[in-house]
Image 1 (cartoon, rainbow, N blue to C red):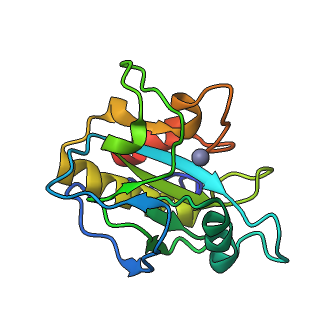
Image 2: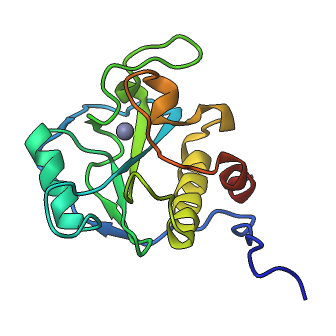
Length: 175
Ligand SMILES: [Zn+2]
């Protein structure tokens, strides 16, 4: 028998993942017209103030405190929540620069936050949901693999998320 730990790649054609609507009223700038999106930034966060670090409501409350928001939030069960419409500029990356030199990464990116503690990695359900969402969006906006990056890659020295993220494994899941 093969190892149970083997990762099943998500199916060839990206199917639309189930997305729960949870739009917020802060942390983004409305964009008129059709926004050019060619980048996905992956983040991690947890609720440091409440009893439950994995609380979706707690993490969203933190976002509100800082007036920031990703486009998508993936909880510890792998459920995907949409907080900001893709066409709007969400405030998730802050002061940032792409490897190709472009700054202001929020302007042309989609931000995805995974909820887990800094001492952990994403769990299997989160990797699966993230892969499904990233595959689907990469196909929809024609986003190259090189532009699917962690926050740390566009804000080095300032940000360290997504923490303990297995890029080798993730790239196999989205290829
Ligand atoms: Zn981040």
